[in-house]
Length: 206
Image (cartoon, rainbow, N blue to C red; front, side, top):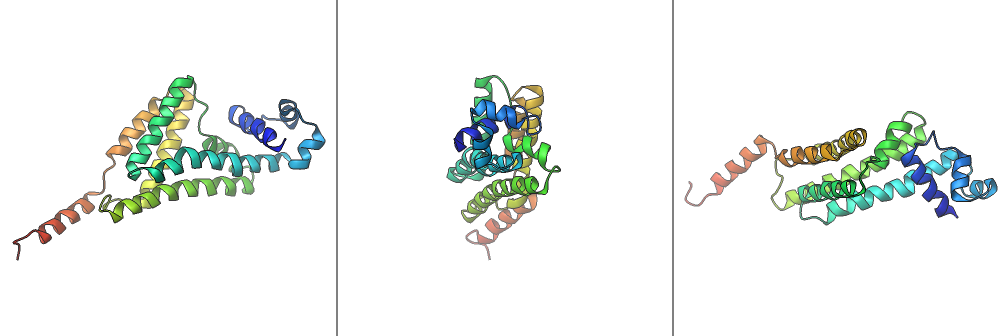
């Protein structure tokens, strides 16, 4: 019963938003009584926090964190995620937007508990990408890339592109942002430093 209520609430918050989803509507859709609902979720806020902490966090983990960590590199992982999401959106023919992004826009200023719960998911998302960049750097790649800033750029690009895609009902902004991210090469200072190291290590040099 608890999972059924979470399923219904997650879908309603995604399609209609938190404020437009009444407890009565959620009860009717889930087929539960008020007593049964309140046994698991004493308030609508408690239900929303459970959706954020259990369902939205899991969606980010499945869609972003696991694929990036399993990829050959951070850039490969990001490309794979964007391409998978674009393919899914084009197949289903509509764009509801990113669950995390939608709720962040609606709830971050509404209540500090919502803001903290949502911010923790963004933080885990960014750290997964930054951690992958640091792993890449251990193998000699991405030497001119700041892991934390690149992660912030990737998350911001995806979140913004999803907002534009939702407004336009077109996955095009995601393709555009992916192309821009792939061109965001390591800084020139990092590339110059690598060239200097290669010159210094070249055989025959005094």
